[in-house]
Amino acid sequence: MNYLMNKLITFAAGFLLLSLALAWWLDARQPLAVEMIPSLSGQPEYCLTCHADLSEISSSHPVEVFGCVSCHGGERLALDADLAHSTMRGGANPSDLSVVESSCGGSNCHSGSEAEGRDHIQRVMTSIQSTYAGAIASIRYTFGAQLDLNPIFGIKPIIDAQTRTGITALGAFDPASESHPSIQQFGENCLTCHLNADPLEGSAYARQTGCAACHSTAGHTFTTAIPYTQCNTCHNRGNYDLRTMNFVERGDQPVKRIDDYYQPIAQFTQCEYTLDCVDCHTRKEAMGDGDIHANQKDIEYVQCKTCHGTPTEAPLTKTLTDPDELAFRLALLNPVVDLQIGDTILISEQGEPFWNVRHLPDGSFEMVGKVTRQYFTFRPVMESGCTQSGEDQSSAYCHGCHAVE
Amino acid sequence: MSDLSRNGFLKLVRGGFLWLSAALGLGGLLRFLNYDPNPAPQSEFDLGPATNFPLGTRTGIADGQFVLIHDELGLRAINTTCTHLGCQTAPGPDGFTCPCHGSHFDLRGDVLQGPAAKALNVPSVELNDGGHLILHD
Image (tube, rainbow over all chains, first blue to last red; front, side, top):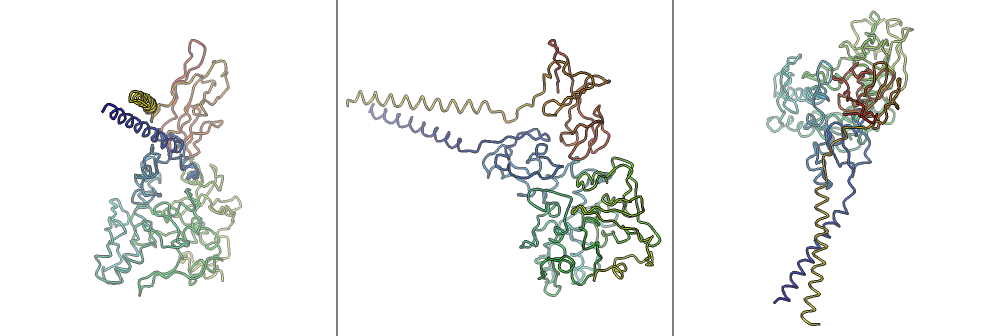
């Protein structure tokens, strides 16, 4: 009995030792933790243990300042991948609009003051690229579900109590509650181009959701130098067939931009197919101005005359005198020009700076491509032989003489 | 082999197992107790003899986290961490510039240009009995 008990206790001691040795061995197999203490949180994170090879998101978001958890969430001290990722916001994309306020918001970041233009999230949430309100209203009106083109629904419910457009709120569009089959089909097949939606399959549509849909053009990076190819992951990809309510993809391949990328029925001037979209279209047009708009046309206001003026009016300009000017901030984010106090730049009718277009002493303008960094110079229409009426300045009139064959 | 010698052998093995288990367990316990997931950052820096910082010098300290300036206004340290989001500002001839979001500060640390709203922190610097400058952040 005594011998048996001894054997049993010895076996238990051996089992204990084996268990402890196993625990040490498993622990030793864990990767050596790489600690980082970002200055923003002051709390250690071990994310770089596995993700040291990721590129920095942008020069405005250095990893030693932001770390990973401030934006992505997750378990900062976990070394097990599943546990570390279990509480991440938006999967691999914290800028998805469902989580963007937690990831990118805050008064010091992208939910700042409207007066300083730092209310990026509010503007995007109410923007037409997010609400898709114009398309929804148009289809519902077309098939008799509403009496006019005033928007009632967006992709997500949204409220704008301080609206300047008269549209104070949108309800959530629910295709299942629509009675007309075409509207139901629209809901099923045609809601792939707004910022909340995952894109269609295929490399031509490859983009992320939320802020990253436009600002992330490759890998783990964010940029304001957005090439036209990124815009074309939604735009110029095809047309909707209103009879079948299906998206009909373009069959041609983007080889030569003027011939193949744009819709073949339209006309374009040289700048429209040479520059990138962001060279002319402003942040308010693309990201919204904080108000809910009825359709895309209501928020697009840049025209040929914005840069070129008319036969009777020079384009609007502004001389930079305050180092706090928005123009300097935007130039810092994408330093394609060395903007200086005293420089005169082009501005839009709404006062938005074209910080990459400077007025030169000889009266001409110099534009630097935000993506290509190419230099372009142009003279205002006022000094040319153009006889176009100052009242008729929509692009169709300019295309009459200046469209490329 | 007799029962007694068998028992003796088992006792020896058991003792070895238990001592090794205790060592492993104790090692693990010490490792656990010594781990500090939120270590306090260093808040005091011995900058060396004050004579190392004559009038007209600007010296980076702690990998540039602080700059010790000795000019006609006196001797002072400035924490170069931007008060907006915590990027490390770059010192220039007229002050400090944040490379992340463009805030500018003068040589006293006061804001010249946002988005930062607060001046750079100015830690205290004192001379100890040994003639060394001690920076307290």
